[in-house]
Length: 141
Image 1 (cartoon, rainbow, N blue to C red):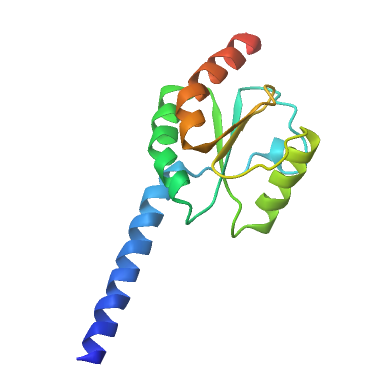
Image 2 (cartoon, one colour; image 1 turned 120 degrees about the horizontal axis):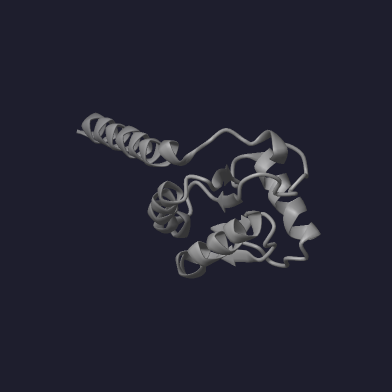
């Protein structure tokens, strides 16, 4: 009986992790060469940096919204940057927040390059992101 429970738990863990990967993987794009260092000039299209933590429930609440808005605005370059397990992304997030004078950032966090105002949390991101994207798109015209 003990062995059966362990097998069932192991199968459930594998199914859960596989489902989480399938949910997140369509959102991911490779890092933009323009963002590979500390350059956040925003040359070209609008760049939306989405910093998230893999196990963060608030981040997972926002992900369907991000997926939908990224389809609505294909001219925007959405960068999905996991910061809890990726040291490079974590360092980039910390450096960017420091440069922008953002104290106490958390996840989920969005920074639209050029706007320099963070949207933090699963309330502000859905409430304000589209307006910020539209504002930046107008500036790029």
